[in-house]
Amino acid sequence: MAETYSLAAEKRETSKKSARDTRAQGRVPGVLYGHGVDSQPFSVDYSDFLRLIRRAGQSSLVDFDMGGKKIKVLIHKYDQDPVKDTFTHIDLMAVNLKEKTMVHVPLEFIGESEAVKSLGGVLNTSHDSLDIRCLPSEIPHEIKVDISAMKEIGDSITIADLKLPEAFELMHLEDDVQLCSIMGRAAEEDLDAPIEAPEADLKPDADEDKEEA
Image 1 (cartoon, rainbow, N blue to C red):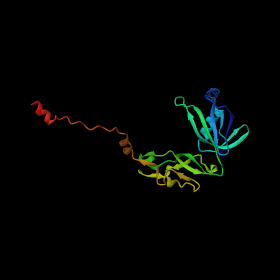
Image 2: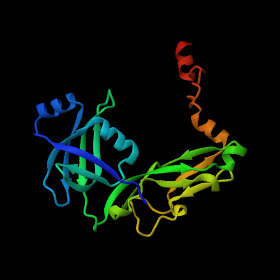
Image 3: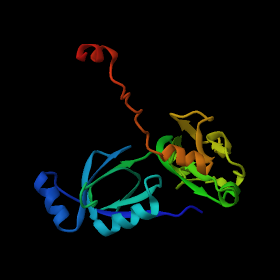
Image 4: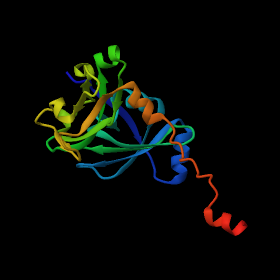
């Protein structure tokens, strides 16, 4: 059974001063919008939201409770201070449980590759998430990518190899897109090596020699 997540909130007024005051009180201002609701400003306890984002991420349904009224939401977006890395604002989206929605689902690379363990290969990942469209109740917390099947240098895993459930509609990418591959150590070193500029031709120009003569 999937883990359930909840978040309690309080209504707030909308103004720049209100947002600053909210943050000063150890709370995060936010806005709720989406299916069946009018846009509503709110605030949540900072520690509560920090625990939620660490456990649920952005691809899990959340029971949002404001004034005793609970609705199902997704964490659509959150802003962070570029210096302090603290949360400064949250956008929550109410969802219709009977309609498909698009979500950003992180990839989790699991297992151990024999090519990495025994052949000195290096795991190279080209994607860390996928955008899928599905019913809210079917949204996964993450999509696992088992790299234990990668046994030789040059082996790779594509989206098609994941065998995603038919209920998941893949967005923006094709099934043959490569998610990760095993590179040889030498290939990795070649990629990291600095590019040297070609040596300049130090021979004097023939015309210049004539002029000097």
